[in-house]
Length: 545
Image (cartoon, helix red, strand yellow):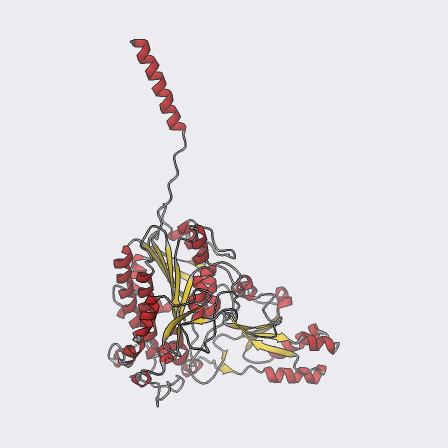
């Protein structure tokens, strides 16, 4: 009996030892049901806080209180525009790598202007007959949306929604589905790159003509106009006017557009309302966030950009747009809480670029800046006089000059000598801070951070020969409104706030970059980062798993 017991005990001990040494079976990490990315077009970083005393508890305040804010997030390249911004947020790369160097650019190989998401190989779906077809074919690398689909063997669903085509197409990547707004017929459309016909839910949404009901409200200030203390006067000569208006002042009549001008909604806060309603409809119809396989919804709110361009960042219109957006965000978060579940989704908000002050507004307050002419015709004339070549500057776009190398070679002239002459002439202009040849950028004298940003925007296949750098606050433009596109903080300092699943609340003031957003998402989701990604995870906000 004792021997049998001893033998049994020995066998039991050996078995237990074997179990102890056997590797534990790996379990898949828990993932969020949904990632929601929101890009607010032209949202400069300070708008997170500028109107905070009038924000409610459920919108921007909920974001910064419950989320993690990277307070010093910068765009790491020089040309700060919509397409480049959306591409860089979702690819974690820069124009030098991803091929989206601007909204449109001159292609030296094709000898013409190229739009960022143009594609003549597809057709529009749901639009009017002469609508331009679009796709992501000009994007050279993958997005975090693509990598999520690849990681789940395409079980994850990805939907991009925006008024601007580039605001939905680039975030949705090569493998997602994108919808954008067509002003000609007041409908959200797509292209045959994604589908042959719009799904029933999208057609039903379009048939409601929500735009007309929004127009019926006109655009009045949310609060009494005299309480808008953080804005310029309502009636100033440097704001743009709407068609049919005598002055750019509240209230703005929108009823006149009902049933005909569906594009006018873009430059009103109702464009945000329209976009978010379509995004909510898409989420429910496509069952996003309804299972354990992570989906992604990319929403771009284009209207703040249209409003900002027309009226400027110190206008009553912009203040009212952000006060309304705060309410829209609160309602959107409540919708996500209900449909997906609080704690089941990861949300982030950022911007594709910031915005410059209206030069006339600054000049009124003794800051001496102004809009300036491009001077390209004068430069070409001077080159012709000195070198005998007509049209030596082939194209000027995105602050870059493209030389006509065929003409220069045919005239047996030295392109480098001509380039040096043009640069010397540019530097004589009082509004030009610097000008340099991209081929000799390493030798150009400028601060290291500035040189890095111009290096990140230079694409050897698509960029020009000479870069023109204007002084801070100056830009090419007219007498009203404003723009963006420079490397300066007003255009490059953007919000970056994460909230929800996997996010440790808090903030950091160390320098982070737009390209870090996709790297952070890849780390959170434990998937491969996009193919051109140069960003790094924002480790302070990542919860230990």
